[in-house]
Image (spheres, helix red, strand yellow):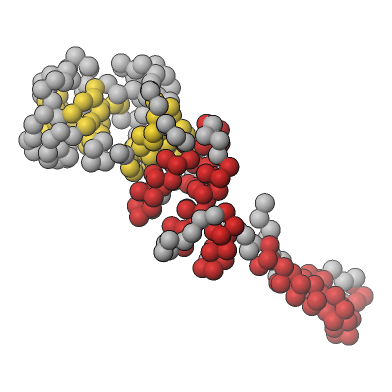
Length: 271
C-alpha cells in the first residue's frame, strides 16, 4: 500500500483549534513552533525514504540500488526499460515456474487490469493483457517472460486486447470448439493457415476451405506473421477472400479468421 504524503499539517492543526483560540497569532505561533512545523519537516524527510525502494517511483541511482539488491544490472538501459528488467528479475528470483506465480510476474511487469495465461500443446504458453506495452520494450518483455516460465516451456506470443467488447462465451460463434474463446473471448478460429500467393487486398490459400468453414464478410482476418488485421469484404471462393486492407504482400504468411466481436487482438511478439 502506497502512503499518501500530508503537506498540510500546519493548516490542519490551526483549523482544529477551538473557536475561542482561532485567529489568535500567539496561539497559532505556539502550535507551529511546538508541534506542526517539526511534524511537517519529519514527514517531508520520511516520505522519500518510504518510497526509496518503490520501483515505479525510483529513478537513476535509486533504480541502480534496487537493481543491485535483486541482482539485475542496468546494462545501459534507460529507466523505463530498466524498471521492466528489475520487475522481471524479481519474478525470476521467486518463480517456481508454476502457473499462479508466472501470472503474478506477468501482472507485475504489465501493470494491466486483465492478465491471462493460456497453455497450448505440447509445452507452450501465450500471454494476454489489456494495457499495451511500449513498442520499444516488447522484445525485452518477451525474452523476460521466457526466463520466468522455466526450462522446457516456450512462450508463443504476447498479445494485447484493445477496443470495445472483446468478450464472448464458449459455443456462441459458428464452428466454435471452445479453444480460443478462453483467450479473452475473440472466438475460435473458423479458418486458419498460410497464404500461398499474393494479390492486392486478397487472402489466397490454395488449401483453404473458406466457404465450407462458413466464413463471411462480418469476420476479421489476422495476419499473425506481420501483426496486421483486415476486415473481410467478400468470400470469393473456397480459397480466396477480398479484404479491406492489403495485409498479405508476401508468402507464406500465417493467418486466422474469426468473428468480429468488437475487440482487436494485437500481437506484440512471436518467435
